[in-house]
Image (cartoon, rainbow, N blue to C red; front, top):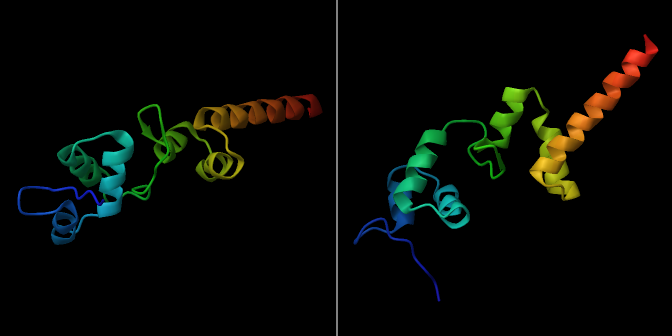
Length: 112
């Protein structure tokens, strides 16, 4: 059985997205993974559209992981790699990076 999301009585969500140049897959992901209504998902997509991280699925502290990393001077590719490839949680990956930086700074201080 196939479940079709409807934007309104006559238009499927996919048709609406095609007509309005929206990415159906991202909007559908917001609906399914974040339990948003169709309207909420469309608004979220429109708000994010055009950013480099529009397809981001990793979130931390109410923002995308990319936004969080930029704001806090962390390496997004490194943290994302730990999460995707090493099965870390976002929280544990950030903690790992911060502990690594702390150890590195302590070693550098000992050299001086």
